[in-house]
Image (cartoon, rainbow, N blue to C red; front, side, top):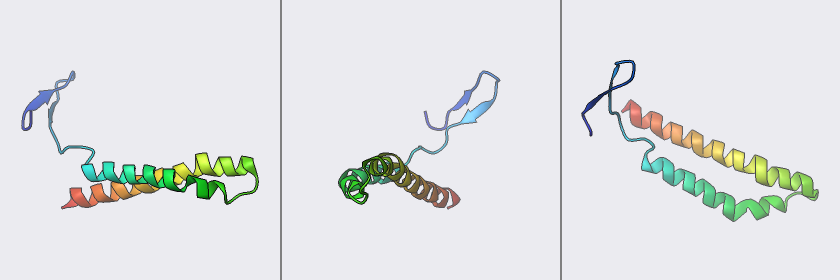
Length: 83
């Protein structure tokens, strides 16, 4: 299928591009998941208040990890596409 030109409903021609997502991005996302699994109990233990601890551990902390892995992935993509 590589190199073939496909047509859309509006009649535009589209060429197949590079594969997405790259394997490196998938690995980084899995590393983020493993990082959360291995460290969430330590984050939970940092706070005395159970509600605050739960909020930080299960909402804010995963978001920070996901944001970080996304930024790393986008940086890798930018470097890869610029070369």
